[in-house]
Amino acid sequence: MIRIGSGAGFSSDRLQPAVDLARDGNLHWLVFETIGERTLAFGHRDRQLDPRKGYNPHLAMRMRHTLAYCRANGTRILTNMGVANVSQAAQVVLAEARALGLYGLTVATVEGDEVTDRLNSDTPLLDAGGRHISDIGHEMVCANAYLGIDAICPAVKTGADVIVTGRVGDPSLFLAPLCAQFDWSNDDWDMLGKGTLVGHLMECGMQVSGGYFADPGVKEVANLADCGFPIAEVADTGEATITKLASAGGSVTARTVKEQLLYEVHDPAKYLTPDVTADFSSVVISEIGPDRVRVAQATGHTRPDQLKVTVGFDGGFLGEAGVSYAGPNASARARLARDILIEILDRVPGAKGSYRIDLIGLNALHATALNRQAESEDVRVRVAMRALDRDIVAMMLWEVEALLCCGPAGGGGFRGHITPSVVTHSALIDRDAVHPQVEVFTA
Amino acid sequence: MTRTVPLHQLAHARAGDKGDISSISVWAYDPGDYPLIKEQLTAERVKTSFPRLIRGDVVRYALDHLQGMNFVMYDALEGGVNTSLNLDSHGKSWSYLILSLPIVLPEN
Image (cartoon, rainbow over all chains, first blue to last red; front, side, top):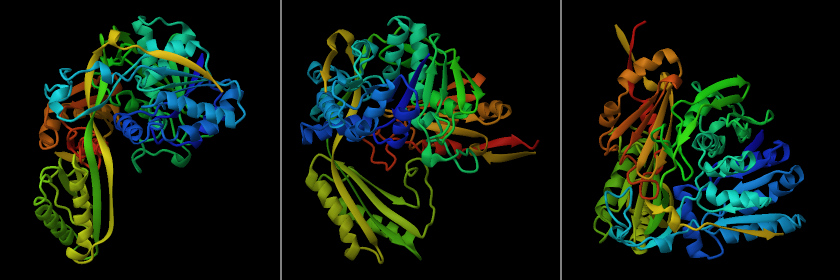
């Protein structure tokens, strides 16, 4: 049996529960999964601004607080916190290890996911209405293939204490240690399907152990402030139990596991990863004890021929700005502010069609879906704009702030910010065009 | 006689995103309610309930043995997480759009 814990399920996930697992989890592996389509784009954006950045911004802190426990407990770390700068991330891990006096600690890097120079203007995009890379009309700034166990397992076999990757299939981070430990071959589709289920359930951290689940009065979760990251106990048969530390908050139930089972899955019988076409359609979920849920009967079929690539394009700048109205007639004053902004912004050359205005408190997140006419005495006018020309975005912020004196009565609380933006699409690449490499460093 | 309740009283749900595709799984709390939910919560109904948001096809996959369904909704995220200007650019809150839909129950 192998015990794998999750130390992060997204870029900004909490630190302390990972420390708790490193100290008390009795783990073979602690896996930090931190890349999404959004955070991969952020990584490239950060690296553009500073070539020494582009890895997960919490990497140093996570290592500082878990490395010593992991080393003492024989727990190995596997993480995609390299994001868009794996080699620099490895240096950060080594520096943290040295600062802790953990000399001799080894770090393996898995690189080769960056495939920008292997795509060209004719490469078709999967999700852009039949368009090709050249049709997007903006500069391609990054392209990362989803690497899988073929790339990670050689790093596992080096025995390194810490393995740092960039873009890999999220479940592959969990499947690779299972394959190495249990000697599952890379074409044993049934076992790879079972291991991928474990990885899929674990990859979002607390989303399987009580996080992202509570709905007061309907779905209660105890002690969410101290919610624990999940632990998977995996047998060589591929069957697994999902659990958590008894001392941690949160809960692992059939319901929490079900919600995660289909999270970001399309056809449950065909979950595509770099490693396998996993089939979750017959998965059996059983509560076998308090906060212990057994999962079985996943399977799998031949892996996809090609690898998925996330392609990033220069998206110019994203600006967001807001001003709030409260008290009697606040809704009417906020609507007036919105109408003024539309009139003014549409006069700015290039601005029309590049922005959206929401009335937070009346109808914002669901404004496109629902034509709701609510009233509120606390309303925020929020403008979001994406444009290649930063000056246009800056003009929008100026006009929202100008409402303080030029707009309806009682407006306050202006905030605004502008950030560089990367927009992303997906493409496919042949496996033989991708060349993963493993390198080992010693602290 | 019948009565109408929001799906939120009968089921829980979670939304995920990949590109411009939103997927939402819906799970009956009580296995006994599942056939009724499945009958009324069709892919067509989900699509026609939010025509300005869900611009592409909706495909439903059912896992009857777990009393759950997965709705895969194309062109449903206003461009996707790195393109949308929605405050909720992931469409995380779309799960509660579906949970707001009314379900008709027999009086007993």
